[in-house]
Length: 252
Ligand SMILES: NC(=O)c1ccc[n+]([C@@H]2O[C@H](COP(=O)([O-])OP(=O)(O)OC[C@H]3O[C@@H](n4cnc5c(N)ncnc54)[C@H](O)[C@@H]3O)[C@@H](O)[C@H]2O)c1
Image 1 (cartoon, helix red, strand yellow):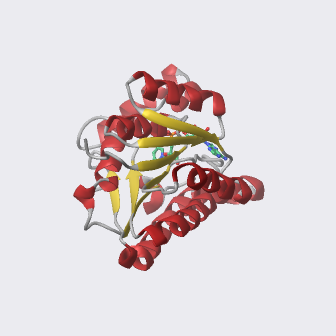
Image 2 (cartoon, helix red, strand yellow):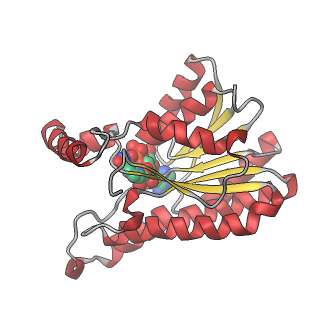
Image 3 (cartoon, protein in one colour):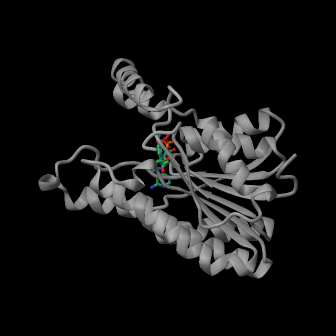
């Protein structure tokens, strides 16, 4: 098992990608703290972990609130006295498909708060725990739109900001034995998308993407989870400050 004895925090653990990461890490021997704003779906994730013989703990937190992020880490340290791995996955696009003239201050701010500021604040708390212990693995969730995407202005800016922040943090924390990397998936098939679009529109979207991606399909949550596992494990001990595109070759 690649994460035996590790304590890992996964935010967004009620969602499609977060659940896959949490299950994957628990299956590799880590105790997984599953956190999300959605306690009910998150408890389903915990149940799945326990059914599979793994071990976890649920802490509900809204990552758009600094005090809740602080409390989340405080509770982890109080209970486990250490934290080896953090995967910051909570996020989403609060302003999809807006023309530039129609950028809305509230939705733009929500994108920056939910995706970028939450990541920075979570990493700040992670560093406070990991620096003294001289060990840590941080994996942040960017997106392939970090390269830019028409009509996804504030979301792209937030995910590009995560990349810049990840590199900056990797430069600062390397000498403390802490690696910091980011994931940049193209389209991933998650239940939330299918729910939001409905099966027909989802089918059209994923067919269109699959045609454009050299590997001929969209990503699964497990594609992302396996990459997160690699970066969180000691196999990736000498990799830091990187963004890994999980894109089937899209936008090569
Ligand atoms: N699905 C994709 O195609 C795709 C591609 C690239 C990047 N991403 C990124 O992956 C991450 C996970 O997305 P997903 O596809 O699994 O979608 P999802 O909607 O299933 O998961 C997002 C999770 O974040 C949680 N969340 C939302 N706001 C929160 C808050 N304020 N505090 C705490 N938790 C909150 C939601 O409850 C949900 O469980 C996001 O950061 C998203 O931007 C997704």
